[in-house]
Length: 155
Image (cartoon, rainbow, N blue to C red):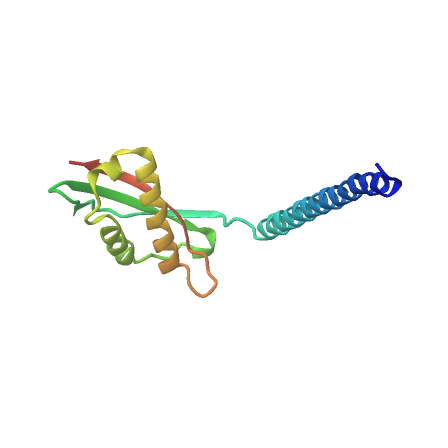
């Protein structure tokens, strides 16, 4: 082997180590950057949640009559519920007709299998609560904060 061949062979590993170090350094820097970005994102969300105080509980408005709702495949749901109002809503009487209508729309045609599991009932309840909150929480006033099932019977 000539001297030039030895120099070329010796230079090749040094270059590959240099490239490897640059790649490793770039990956580490990207990982640190992504971690820092995630940390600051989560901190800003936590701060936003901490700034918005939870509404205080007010009166519970029971919906006096239970209703029977048609599910799919000739099954039925007997449903009764109450609205948990906030203190901001005050003590004035609440018209519950829209809440009843939203409940009928939510549950009509659902499969009984969806409502027989705890997860299915919880999901349907969360969806109903979201619709009721959207309907009753207007003009930057948070009036409804929850619903309670007083009757929930499937057949």
